[in-house]
Length: 363
Image 1 (cartoon, rainbow, N blue to C red):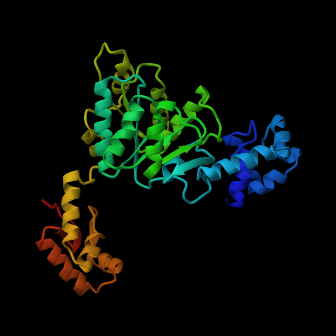
Image 2 (cartoon, rainbow, N blue to C red; image 1 turned 90 degrees about the horizontal axis):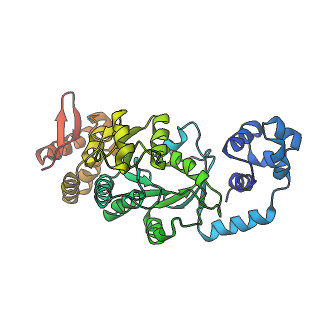
Image 3 (cartoon, rainbow, N blue to C red; image 1 turned 180 degrees about the vertical axis):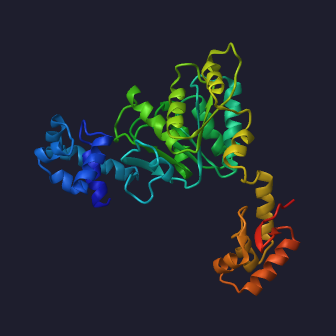
């Protein structure tokens, strides 16, 4: 654990010292080490409440050592807002977490959130699982909150196709909530990630979940709401998504169905209608290849020798000039031209005017 993480963790465990206060300390003192050494008067000048400054000066060393051991035992990684590996999408929101507790591997792929009713219908659960599976099969990370119902179906859909998913908790990273999702919790940990901004040991209090929801939407390029009644917590996630400039999607439902009243209202207010994953992909990721195209691409790559394969993998749907391709692959322009022509004859490359090239549409 770095010194910054060490000192930030110590401050994060101080009662009453919230996210905004941590940002104030960093801004005013430059480092959390300096903030821990500051006097009560200096802390108050930085905007810290008098009721909290004494707690900073007399932080609970026993609690800190216990928490640190717990994090080490669970192999929890700390990521602060000031770290290079902090999620870029989350950094852009107006109230990002100062500190994230992370278990497992945090995917780097674009993410999409799916949330909804804890008491979802069988049809809603099935549709959610299908949509999540299709998104994950295209390389999109599915984000949800590990709750009962729609959240569970979203995570399972991603896991069905060995895709990536992130579970965001409204409690400490060392707690499984709800308890019946213990198996799912550990399945996600095997190859994906579980994150929380709550200190270890924090119970799943109702007040923690709005903050959890802002992280779910903050990590994602868009949010899909499935079967949410008016007043549902899932609608809080859609509100955060709108504030953060994310796209909001909703699955329509029967007019008389209470579990669809919230989603139907979202659609009336301008949310994108979703009945299948294609509705999301066409708006946010129109150039992502289908599963069939990915399989054809994998087969094509396996048939190529090393030089052809390396050059082919440099290409995508964005046009690149032959000179740019040459610089990237360290081959002479003559070699690149010959390989591109060969790949074009096989259907793997499409030549554009001006000596620009993109990947071809493999059958």
